[in-house]
Length: 596
Image (cartoon, rainbow, N blue to C red; front, side, top):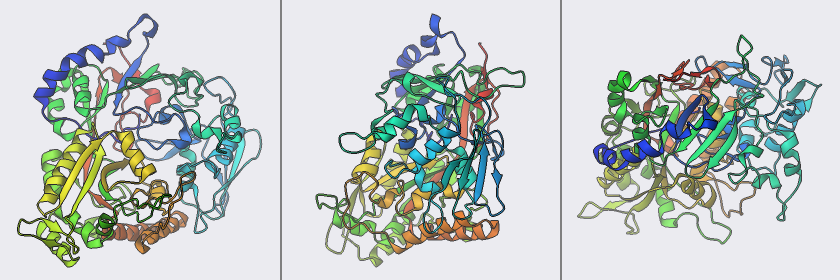
């Protein structure tokens, strides 16, 4: 289970206990699943919102159900970070010039419906889906290579071998190509090749959440069994999954994995304590309480180093107009957001030490870079990375320098007399992120800025940011990219699908008028291209060091706090090998459930 966006829980605990414990005990206990037809080993987890799609190529959410049901050619060891064979029987053969990579599939692979999984599926997945310009998938961004942004070519060598050819050496190729899911040609080819009434491939509207889960073909540990809106997603063991233990027993051992949809992290916490959940990503606020309850509650609290994630505040820098010739962002606000001193002032005005102490209970640290500390490419403040300590007076100086003015009441106005006031969004239900937003609102009020803070449904926020593009600022979190910086390629490429702070027109979107990227923005994108093509590790690090310097100077994202990775799992789940890299369930295939 990927715990990328697990963040936090709680406050007003006593009130919530009184209001919700009865519900937690009656409606969310594992007992509800122990019917005559369901006496099987199972694990109950929670997610904050309903899935948006079961279509792997179109999924942008995290955690996503597609990560439970698909597998790629290679996988990453959650303890060491090293690549290991998955659908491929071994690591690939690589030519001397590093441009030709050949994978050999395992023998006897099958899809969850019993159909053979072959090289043809690999070629179809890449040529017909990932590399198909008619399919608007973010996956294509991480496969673009070099200055030309060329894509690899993929061809069948023989019944078990597939060849990838790249135009130039591409350092992250194995990690990303190996980890991308392989999709079923026999189930999807017709949908890709057939257009709807608007001329778009039917694939784009296929395998959504309205599809019967049993019709979705998978190749991973699990297959979809059922989905009930606002209640749960149930995954059942894939009977044709390739892994077997040393004795020849089919893996995974856990028959059923259940995602309870719990749209509030306080409620998730209560459900875990009442026995309704088997695992929980822990917020710092509840760490000490759960730690004290380990023995009595029959669970273990696992801790690691800083999470592989970034929590941030970002402003909408998009200066384009939509197809109706309307600005995406109010031009007055857009001038503020695109003023460097304004963004730097915001960074100096946010009291991150208070955030660490009060919201994270000391179980975190201020964050300054998009590249994780565990990465060999990370630039630390001690090595020269710019940081923004809490200096509200310096923030005011920067604002005055940029032409902003204060009235007698300490309210901030721009040079044209407009009161500085903007909207800030985050996803509802994540109480820690809501608390972060409340603090930022208070911090910015101290420098005369009025923030209208709103927590909205996660899917609604995604739509506003990535589809409508009509927003002022939002607090978000990105994680799960690992220690390889190129995992952020689709964030830093100026045409990338996750380039949220200045999102360009994407395939299939209505046209944008007047979209442009700043010089520093383009430079970061170029550095990521150079870094991906550089095989010398020292030179590679120097490239990513420069990219971090530019991001911290220009602040497209204002990074906040990085918490320690913490998760709790019931004792009935055995075989956990916890790490901040892989979390508690990276080796889900070998975990077991024992009845208490």
